[in-house]
Image (cartoon, rainbow, N blue to C red):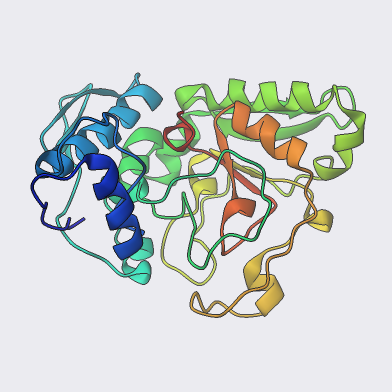
Length: 278
């Protein structure tokens, strides 16, 4: 992602504010250190973003360089391709920095997300293919079966073992069963693993890696269904029926919610711990 040129003498806090106003895609969040000068803005913000991958995926990422993530097998993956992108280009050709370009909100949804605020929808596909499997056959080698809502529904779901996603989803299930009032939202899941592209695109769905779940379709809304289109530029009216407590339980265990996107997908949760670090 191409950054703006720094202006000497201003604080990084001011930099963050200015750049957010100029272009919301250029800044992930406030800089890690409030003492960073604007002349070192790019270095500080990049290092902060890289550190989130280290913390979120310690079994895979071992260190970072100036513009790379280094995997345990010594694979060096580029972090920033240096390109400034439109919203459509971010969806289609995101890099690792772009994945963190929009901050995922940890607070409850009070107002509809701003236009094109879709934190988590920008995905660098080589990153997920390397982590979970480059092909359907490779992904399937890491899948395991969990029982969703074992005291109530006893539904078998296929989930990846990579990053203990299976254990995290089981923990979500166990916690949901402690709240009978929430079961109506999750007792008819539409599925987990499915090797497929996202509707209307050539991009792999996170379901392809066994890291996502769609909950009860009967209480869910999806922007493509509501507009009866696949046009990302169309003006949308936000809709949601999913209880905030359901969302918070998923987030507690590393899953982000598609209901916090402008292009809402309220049935959808995917394992993305790098977006949930505080």
